[in-house]
Image (cartoon, rainbow, N blue to C red):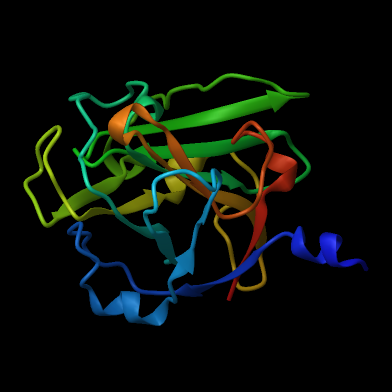
Length: 224
């Protein structure tokens, strides 16, 4: 295998199990000590020089995520869920649970704790997001954000922000290969978008091309 092919090899992450716990937005729960930080790569070399990273755990009822990034300005104005959050500061997770089917789950969360959970059928690059039906009770996510070095206000000067969230397996129905068991493999990707100073910078875990929706390039999750 040549050096270029090695460099583009899909990233892999071993996901450790944990008991259920409450999310606070800070990532202070002891369970997070079981997971290592994973760095996201900046897609634009000339982009904002911020650091971005994430952690992931899984329980008997769902998936836990902790995403963290340095920042200088909180660029977020949208005050409702299911808005076009990707046009402002946002963390994103894409979960492709079964490679037999071109459908995956996308989750976005803003510094203001607004969310966009959608299911994406993707047929040869033609894709569209579908909102969850009966999004209530055990199908609801649990989510919280925290701001570092400033207030949780639009356009505030800050030093960074974190998002901590739980995605229940019930919300992923009827995607296949859910819930995961020890030895289960999923494909996934993790992203960040930042929009300071009128410029957009993006970060990724697995390298994709022009679109975040190039699911065949996603990385691999292996559940322990």
